[in-house]
Length: 168
Length: 305
Image 1 (cartoon, one colour):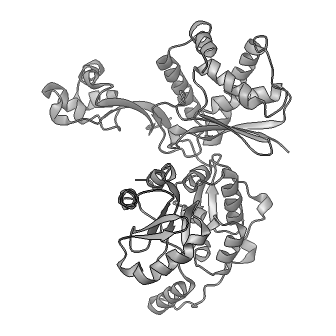
Image 2 (cartoon, rainbow over the protein chains, first blue to last red; image 1 turned 60 degrees about the vertical axis):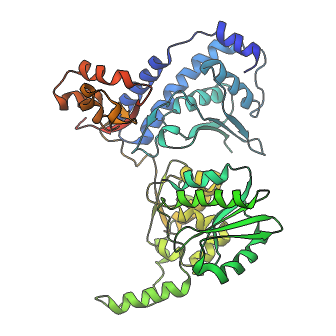
């Protein structure tokens, strides 16, 4: 994060306590687990919640963003900025495929699943809230793309990865 | 110890330019950036030293190759671009030590061995079976367009897995022509790993692994269990205390509680087990929190919904 970014993060962004946020997210996940029949249903519900969050965020920041992404690839930097503004940390890596149709965002220190160890639900996308936010941005900006969580530290993967992929 | 943790020592070592696991015949598997032109020298060395091999080096145009015996079936080969021989040997030995704690899958069988085993089975089995295994009926295959595989699907072995892992079999040849990593993907099937986990271990793109797995599902070599089939069940994510320190340094009046902080019981369960209140149990763990004790969040099956 540059100096201006650090100042903006320190002075201008409203913050919430991390333990409260993580505990709330965990209990939200618990409710989804207990009210769903299978893992895909949990993933979808969490993504739907993320979609609503994404709608709110887009409304909140539309005025504040000086330059909006106009091509799919430009979302690699727009979503990086959005992640930075809302979590205080950057993605560890952002990868764009050669044909510019796939972007992968990874975070080795994901706040959502910090300290979580899921041992017996291999297809769970614990941090799928982020995919939902990305999906909202894609849909509301008129891009026919899908967003999903590809790997998750909570499930023993080395990093959390979210992918956005242009549909054919 | 998981295989990817052991191999990641090499993957992220800047002095390592490539590595792979070799059979005693010098067939490479799980290869990571291993240059093709070093294999003739490696095979020649294995022909001579395979039976007595522990640790040896070969000087090649690409750098120093270290060969190290992992178990009776596997040899680790690591190529170092620029490294002092002593350090290269030591680094390889360290990884072999880690790999010795891993349950490595058996390498694919050579065709002759597979036929011999089938003959022995036929001879000792209660019912005599034909020596040549009948290939599974074509009708059992699934149209590839109907196969859906995603990164979160767990891969399981199916009827034709064993046949596919016989070197030189029709299925094995088809797999090799499908993708150079196809056999590696099958080697990594352990009934628990997801498509993503396999791609991570092999350091190959997820899409490539999905392509291989889809083909294998269509040929009844593997099956997949995708998130829509994985029952979430009556479970809940809870915080459990995990003590990693030295019990002898724990105060006597805290010891009963700390002994149960094994990462499986919640503090509530510990308190109930010891007949004390939650707050009393909490007071016993607080002095160690963030030092030798941490709270981890795990999923736990609960009695009923």
